Image 1 (tube, rainbow, N blue to C red):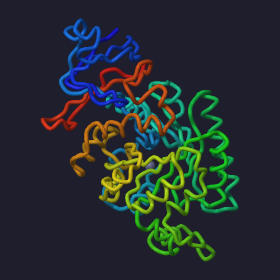
Image 2 (image 1 turned 90 degrees about the vertical axis):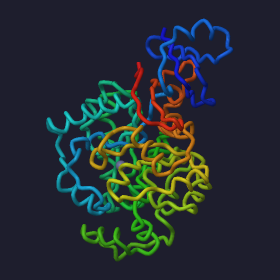
Image 3 (image 1 turned 45 degrees about the vertical axis):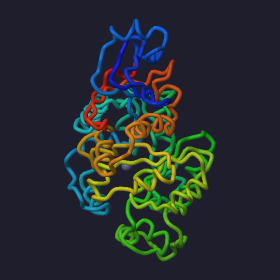
Image 4 (image 1 turned 180 degrees about the horizontal axis):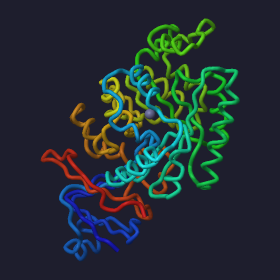
Length: 397
Ligand SMILES: [Zn+2]
């Protein structure tokens, strides 16, 4: 048994507890959280290990591409999404070599050190599967597909199924499903195949959403930078029918509204988009990856609007192709620096419970409730109580 205490303990399921004593089994399973005045508090508090700062559940990284970890420091900053994609195409490897596999292992270790215990991870390949099979942390793997040629939709989908089976053979109980890449990169036919797949298996759908205004323009008018980029890739847009609506409603309308849908980035999402999504489905999650947004576009989503609309926010690091660290704490610091005044308890909920809920890990993770093994993080806070630094106290058993 371990007895841990701090200036404040953030169970997330309830309000922070000043000088709470957290009792865990040796494997990290939560036994109870004692409040001053509770039976047994006076006897345990003086002997508990004290942490200066706060204790929180382990972090959930809602969006990562672990397989791209070898791209750390290789792509230029602030080149915009099209510049980023162009550079990415030039350096991307399609075979795993020692560099790729070593970078995956290092990145996972870094996430663990940074207090992350579960990840929503995008896979276009099997590069990460062997690392995931070591079960050092929990993953929900999204086998990500793209393809605008409707004639090839079945073939692309079948390749995704093969990759998914490969993961399931290696890790039989691994949470995983096929997912669309982005609003603009799939034919409606491929999108519908993925929608049906997830409807049948109650999958979680992750989709890169509204990273640039050009994405909306493509759907509204069939023109703009994304349309030009597509033409450069040799796609025939002469028969393309713009929907007249933003990319979010134009795409999400093809996805089952009884599934959890994880919208990633949302850099240019408007109040109207959020309203539409909220009316469409009750299980929408809005992933913020602020450091990646600053890396690529040097622009952040309208976080105050998302909060005002009651959007369920989760936090992701995206990949080393567009980030200098894989740390949810670093993402939270960027959010605090750019949008001061968000209560620490709310931020921590985004980074823990909301992510656990989105990825289907709510039974085990996300709060310091009895019976869970959520990992416990020690975070230092500044004089205003805002997060400052941190490290992992206990990881997932
Ligand atoms: Zn991404």
